[in-house]
Amino acid sequence: MSNRLKVTPNDLSAFWMPFTANRQFKQAPRMFVSAKDMHYTTSDGRKVLDGTAGLWCVNAGHCRPKITEAIQSQAAELDYAPAFQMGHPIVFELANRLVDIAPKGMDHVFFTNSGSESVETALKMAIAYHRVKGEGSRTRLIGRERGYHGVNFGGISVGGIVTNRKMFGTLLGGVDHLPHTHLPEKNAFSKGVPEHGAELANELERLVTLHDASTIAAVIVEPVAGSTGVILPPKGYLQKLREICTKHGILLIFDEVITGFGRLGAPFAADYFGVTPDIMTTAKGVSNGVIPMGAVFVKKEIHDAFMTGPEHMIEFFHGYTYSGNPIACAAALGTLDTYKDEGLLTRGEELAPYWEDALHSLKGEPHVIDIRNIGLIGAIELAPIAGSPTKRAFSAFVKAFERGALIRTTGDIIALSPPLIITKGQINELIDLVREVLRSID
Ligand SMILES: Cc1ncc(COP(=O)(O)O)c(C=O)c1O
Image (tube, rainbow, N blue to C red; front, side, top):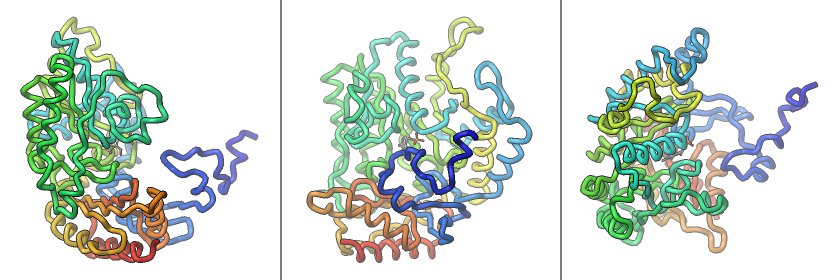
C-alpha cells in the first residue's frame, strides 16, 4: 500500500504547515471544510464570517459561480500548455483585460504564481532593465523596514520583518532600507492616511547620497503595508518617493499584492493615491485566491527596452512553468467578470466611511492602543502582554474563531480585510464580535 493510502483523515503530523504554530494547531485544529460568499463552514458545522478575505485574497467572496464555472470548463478543454515558446488564447486575453484596468501607462503583464514570485520577477526586471539600457552598475535595491514582500530570498532581503529574515543567513547583498512610517506617538487613531511623516520619504535622498544613484536599481514599497500590521503612508509620502525616484532614475516598484484589485476602493493603490510606479506586483485578488496566480505590471518603456537584439533570441531569461497556466487564467477571467458585474473594484469607496466609523467605535475597548483604516482595511493594535508579545492578539484570534469570525493577527495587531462583498450588517456583526472578544481576553 502506498504511504498516501495509509494517511487517515485525523493524521495531522505529515503536513508541516506554513506560517503556523504547528504544535499548538495540531493539539486544537481549526479546520474549514467549505465556504460560500462571506462565510466559511468549519469541520464541526459552524459558520465563520470571513473578516480577512482568506489571506487578503478572496476579494469577490467564496465559491462564486463565474469563477467556479470558468475553472471547470477550462480544465476540461485545455488543462496545460507550455509557458515557454508556446501560447494559448486566454493568457493573451487576460493580459489585455488586466492592462485595461491598470493605471495608465502600465501596458504589459508578466505572469507568475504568487506574490513572492511577482516580487522576485520585479526585482530581476529592474536590475536587468538598467543593464539593457547600459547602466549595469545600478544593482542596489532599496526596501523598507517592516515591509513584507513574500518569502523568497529577494523578497525577504528587501523586506523588513526581522522574524522573516534572521533565520536565513546573509540574504541578498546590496540592499538597503528606508525607515518604516509607523508613528503611533503622532498618528494614533488617525482616520485614513495619517497627517505626520511624509518627510520620512526624504530618507531616500540620504541613501542616494550614501550609495550614489548610479548604483541603485529600484525602490520597492507596499503602498499600504499589510502583513506587518497595516501601516499607512503618511499624506504626501508616496508622491515624494515618486519624485525622488524620478529625479535619480531609480525605478519605483509598488508591491500591490494586497492593495490591488479593489481593496482600497479603487482598482489599485496607484489609482487611489494618484501615484504611478514603474512596476507593480500583484497576486491574490487577480484570481480571487482560488488558483495560484500573480501578475507583474510594467510600463511600456521598461518592456520595450528589452525588445532589442536578434528576434529569435529570448529577451528576458525568466519565467515559470506555470506562468499564465490556462486554468489560472480562466479563474482570473471569471474573477474579473465578477468584479465588473458587481462593481467590486470600487465598492470599497462607498463602504469605507461606514467601515471607518465601525472600526473606530472600538476606541476605548480593553487593550486597544491604536486603530488604523483605509479602504476596506482595518487594524486594531493591542497593548502587548508584558514579556509575552503576540500572545494577547493570538488569543483574540482563537476566541474570534470560536465565536464565529476569522480575523488575522500579526504581532499584537488585529488586521481586518473582508471580502469586498461585505454588507453593512456584516460589518456590524464583525466589529461587534471583535468588541466581545476584546472584552473577554486578558
Ligand atoms: C505585499 C505582499 N507582497 C508579497 C506577498 C507574498 O505573496 P505570496 O504569499 O502569494 O507569495 C504578500 C503576501 O501576503 C504581500 O502581502
